[in-house]
Image (cartoon, rainbow, N blue to C red):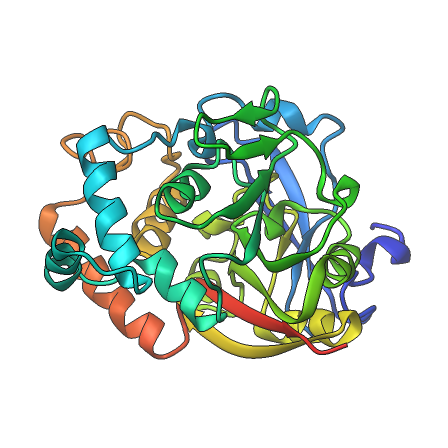
Length: 323
């Protein structure tokens, strides 16, 4: 039995009836076992036996580092569309905007009231693919940080992606976003307090994270693919984010569920001992996958209902600085 102090929830300090969940590493398929505490009060899952060296769990073929920039023609067309979506109209931009609609990232920025001149920070952004797109589309003051890139990246358009930890960053911003990076961080309360210090008055913090109060976790438990042991240190719930927000000077203004079918087919694979990088994985080879096109279509349709009902396994939390 683990010592009592290891069974105490780091989010709400709850002790009684907390459970231990044994989870295998299934992204690369090493199947190394990791233990997660499941809080019986706030529902947050938290990794207990953290690796001594995390760098080995973020190799160059981890998906964040595999993202590529758009081709030049597509990038140019998207630049016109995105500028039109932000109010800088042009004939070509208007046509593209009308045909393809508003890109998701701009919808998120508009919800948080972010403008083209606002200072924006993306934490844990990898190579900064999104920020590069934003810089090209007229967002003048954007910067990213990621401790796992090889070195600081300087793009020709002036964008910089700094190799450093969030706690080492100084400065004030109008918008800070964690696009699936917050769950990778130790000491979440301190990270949110630091975010508050780095934000200007009444500005927004965006947390895009997997959530444990979801159908996928309740149904698949230790085979839930978004656990992503050991890279995800915390798997939050709405209640646990509310607790962190209150303690760090934020108020949740909006929650939007944006989960994908991966939560279903990925978890189904894991439950059958098929890792994400296995040659039989739908992610690697659709022809060798255990799923038919009909299966995938059914997963896609189910996700629409899960998100609509607040049961999806990914959510966007828009937190406004109030203190």
